[in-house]
Length: 396
Length: 158
Image 1 (cartoon, each protein chain N blue to C red):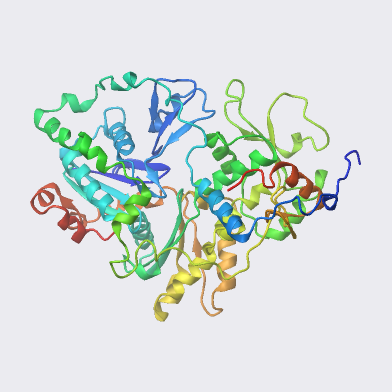
Image 2 (tube, rainbow over the protein chains, first blue to last red):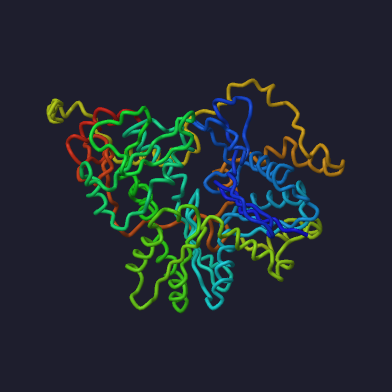
């Protein structure tokens, strides 16, 4: 009886058996201009020789699973003989869903898991609940924690008390990695080079070069300086997929501050974009989205909780999700929350070693938990009682 | 300076169209919606003939027992696909959230920030102080205003 843990995200699916390691695989299909017949699924991305102008087909829209055709193809590939070789009748599955998932999507997920794939039993849970479980497992004495899950589609801030999420405190900011990449594409396309088609390449640029500034206006001033004084400016070499396979950032010693480069590489010169793009997580109003940023929403969410719990939440802030990997993210969140929180409370922000796989690790611990058998819904249960039993048992 | 400075004032004020706040707001919403797109180019496979896609796929489902393949037919038929091709907006409306009580998807959305909005130049990205009279875009200096007028100002209508 093995358990497969699948953190079904909009960008990456984190999947693995609970007794093995996790694999992070893109959760979408790709089409390339060069190889016209084939549609690549999930990790077949490595087979594409020329990822320029790559066309993405994502099953998720705004963070919710709407396109089941594509999702089923990706799952067929993941569960099939090339990847995990799942023996459905003998496997439990732990699968994650977004918060406030629509009931039609939940019902469809039940049908597909039990009737099509025929898993032995299934547990549908929020990714943040798995993170909270992992956090409480490490810190036994803490009663409450607040999880910030900043992913591809949006950012959720969810308070947890004694292992249960507090629905009144859930706050969703509609800024995620996708928005940051698209915005970076737009500004580069306007200021330097037309890259609107190059999602894959610009995503790489964002991950390599962007950082969260600790002092926004000061960095803005430095970025306006000319020549060597401008420590913020970086040159990024774009890949051309023949000689340069992967883009990289030129080290400062090789940078040419005056005049042009002699070699024929395509270069992007990035100054304030480096920190203005992740700034959108903290101030979505910079771009016109009238919502609070992460620190403000954290404080707002905690203020909606009962007073006696508030100090506990401030002491246990957990950051998960891909966007937290920007250098300087954790320190900036701490600084802003410390400034907004009441002075007598202690503030502590935790960034785990691997924020992307943190919920998956929680799922792994959950699968080994002795109470696991009572939390899942078995196939027999589902066939007797239908969707009702899933609605009762799963807290989504 | 090699470039010839053309002042904006030399243009007849009656010639420049000024957008009202409704139009500006619509433009902004359009821009924000464009940021939600997955792809900005067209599907490379869109022009291929349909015949290619009808090739049988020899995958696991054909090799497993009859019973499971019968079950799969139930879940892969056309009517099933009709159910599963709704887009996000349709699903949200179906959910009919005004009926249920307590926190839900719409309530969970973050409120507007209490801090004032910061403005950045549409051309160079640095903090801006001035607004374009015609379209409401921000700029930081006269040079950026010139670039803005040449490239973006009122270039597409809403």
